[in-house]
Image (cartoon, rainbow, N blue to C red; front, side, top):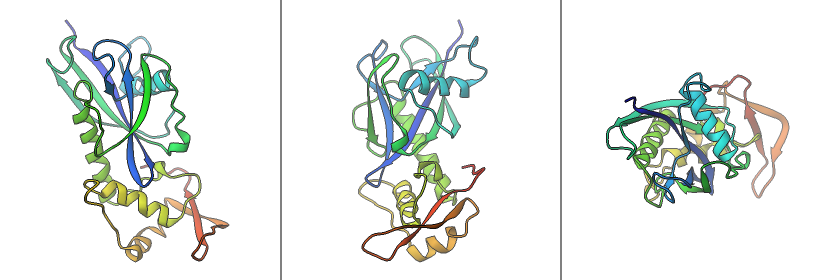
Length: 220
């Protein structure tokens, strides 16, 4: 017998300065009624690779398309799925929440955003461990000075970008991360990955803040 081969996706977004992960409630057995990451079983006749499987899972189950998807790790074993020996390749995706219009379509009956550091309800299979893995990888990428620009709106200020980085770098809700504003701006204001939107500013109680956008060809 061949193992069950699947792809799961930890889709992250931001809300209220907290990193969120998208969960779906499974409609079918196994684990019907339980929350999980969106995922799909490999269909060799349709999927050229497991990235295609992951993209299909997002498209068919919740009507979401993502510009960024990365393979992170394989989870495998004889006891992770009651249907038998299985392996799943975990993928990570980032998207601004205003671009995630998740709609229940196939094999799920509900979707929700959950705090990435406290996913809430017990998750099906080994998906709690998968969320922790994807969360850890994302934190390390930003710690290594990669900019999580796929989480940003079309236009953003450096303060907004700093808040997103702080949310990702925070080890837990009880231990928020606070980056030095001056150091952050010195490091990233001249990054080739972001460009000033000339003549565009955000107006508030303080002086107008320059708006930026993501540079063409950016890769996380």
